[in-house]
Image 1 (cartoon, rainbow, N blue to C red):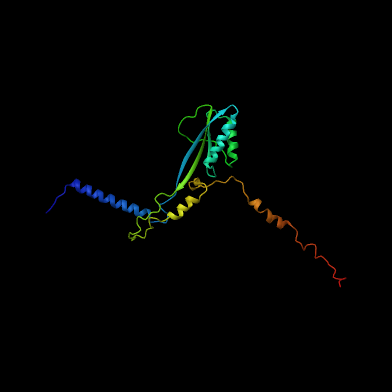
Image 2: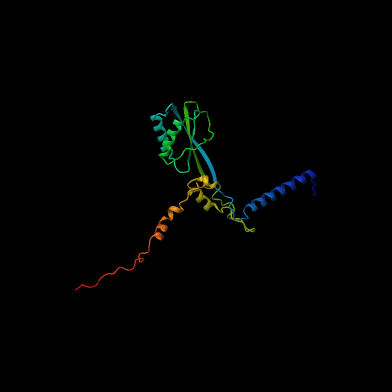
Length: 216
């Protein structure tokens, strides 16, 4: 039986086949090189606490409340602390900065945008915490497929990148590396070498003369 198809049907089938071929080619192209398609994804989460402020900054109960919150949040290296204060009180900022300093943290100048409104007479402390994960790993989607194109496997890079994401102290450094402050430790690390080189040789003044006479 001969079945005739109209031109629109033929065009639709051709377009579908073309899209399928393009999709296969694109998927194959992604795995042609040695760059893994599974890369760490960095996510940021904001945690907030609203404190009651006054003319002198923070009261003692509010300071204790903030310190307890820092303790509960297990604040650590890589976290960023910011203050959203409608009054921009210097006393409030100094009080918060002093508590943050006890945990070895600094306060950023700019606070991120958070939900809600901060009323005058209150200050919002924001902790921005970044986390890094490698999504889609482990990936065994092509473990039993033929590899006629000599492509990298679907799970290529999962182990290395997942370990890096888990071990990096500050996930932000996966997006942008840490920048230096201009200070260097080369001079301090070479002080011992310079001191050793600056000392006069022990044999410069000649050998010490010792008498061997008078012995039994």
